Length: 614
Image 1: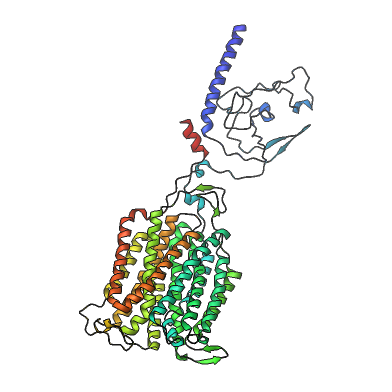
Image 2: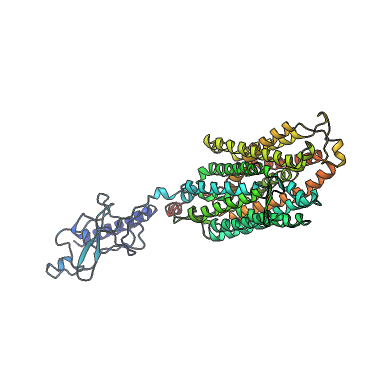
């Protein structure tokens, strides 16, 4: 008998050793349990009365630390009573034998895990009684779903309602910004007879300086607040102020260029705050919808450019100085500013009472992003600084060319085609309106055909650049054009030697480059820049982008205006050719780096335990 008992003990020790080894091997498969409280009470087994009413369980059903616990010591000498039947000191082996050790007992010899009954109620222990409590339902998370990429954790549904609301606001604010596009130079000549081209260049530069100084500050403010509503509304209040100043510029005779410079500087500050609106899609749209959202925003931008100068055309019959109401003159130059203030007032009402902003990504620890509405915190790698600089440089070149045409456009058409001040205003207003309408139609088609999702952003930017280069090539004053410039407004020496191009060619090329080329470049460059930065708050980086782009708008008008005055349009066109060539070289060299930020895959603790065991 003694030998037999010793043999049984030896078998039990061997089984215990094998059991611990097997349990440790099973630790790479943790179970997702539903806990009714912070104190875990494991599920009972229905196999035996002993296992049903046993409370002697470890805290973890998956990982066994140390030696497994066996049956609690009990009193065998006492007779069973109704109360002692359910006492923790009563042995239940008088009714049935203890559950043997089998491969089905991952926790304890008395609590085999049976997958057929996973939803049994949990037993809650009290001092003198027991009760069966059904734990609250909590959906289990499959371990297979915990290994995901950044898109599955930080993705969100596109908030199309708020995006459309911002589209309307962008449309209204863009109208009020472009309503002065074609009339600034003629209006400056009316209110200040001593104003020169250089004065107009500095006024245009003051506007860009305002944008450059305010855009990063508004972007930083937006990041800190976690919204764009308050900064944008602040910029709209400043828009109202600058429009009122513009309406009363005629009350400063002899100082028109200075007063207009101050008004345009404040308008630039307002435009810097308004630049937050086109960045809303970077966090309100899902990753797969960002190209579409960017195209919609740029479509609203183009439509605003089309409608803004249209108001100038409508009010052209009012002429100058028009009629006076106190200190206010109502004429072809001030009436658009009055309409602009009405549009800004409507925008303020929309932002204050109807716009419900989608939440930004919550700020987590450094180099991390916490997706709003989820429990995951994901460490982000730093973005590619070379790719970011390349995107910013592309925006700088684009804004440089745009500012040049915006600054010298009126002077160029007035001298090249021998137009009066009124005709210059009307001609440029028609061109800007047509280019805006073409751009809106192009982007609308772009959205409907879903080309934004099919065309690679790098290819889209390249096509836009090539269209802009084609504009310079087609509108260059080639020697084979018959006749030279003959205009009373052109007093420079180059006027008599510069060939005159057909106005139809210039008008058609202008509409194509600003309606198609710039629109396509805007969409894909914005999407590419956002992708390079990754799913983080981008207000500050977009502010820096606007800052540097505005610096090119400051340098462009000053340098190009003097170049145009002394050397004529041919030298200006060659200079712009060289600028586009540098950008094309940069895009070719860094082509492979202009891709969205790569995020490492997230692995849950299951994968980590598995790797550790291997």
